[in-house]
Image (tube, rainbow, N blue to C red; front, side):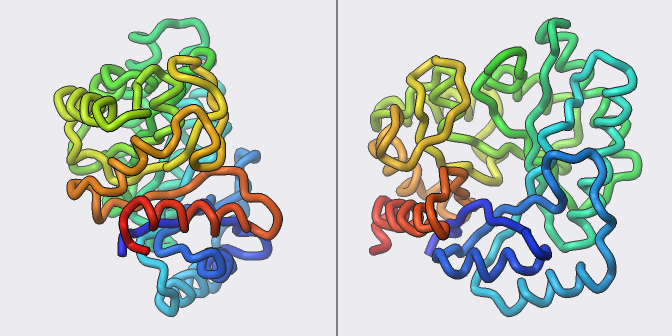
Length: 282
């Protein structure tokens, strides 16, 4: 079976995410390692890290990735905020290493009026500084964005420009289907899916995709608005997602839902079922 799952809550303790994930049928999972709306998180104790690793060892859940806090902006123009963002991201990498998580998803950043080229240069410079002391076992997964506001990373050219100067073995991509559609990449048909992936391969390389965020979109093609929707209920639909789930190149790549959860995470259970059906596994 393909590694399919959802972003699960760590409320009450990091290790509790596994039980929540298992309850909805996850075979892969994404978590925050701290409160995503705060700069600083409580340090992870040795006991908490061991409890997480033990729960993982007992669980049928395979790949686990983490997502960094939304406050981080490695393209920040304000020196204080840039420094704070670099320190926070470095801490996120260390937290992943403590837990045995080897993939950390991040949004590239917002240029805040400085322009694409200047923003991308700030991101690259930040990564080069962070990598000096970063745990080598944690791969940084740069996520494509919807391009809302001054967000960078919405075009495949942006991703290529960010990744090209950096050591290839330290970086990958997390491909978000909602964001791609909102950015103008038409994934609504089989032909569109094939064209988008050909374009991505030419500019970035499909081998760089180490995780997917599988989300439908409340808003339409090229809307540049980041709003996730239940699978099949949005502007993306199921045709392109069927192609993704049956693409042999990505069979072993984790596919993570970030769709609205509903009551008692019931929507996660339903959406995981949709993905399994699209993959031909049920």
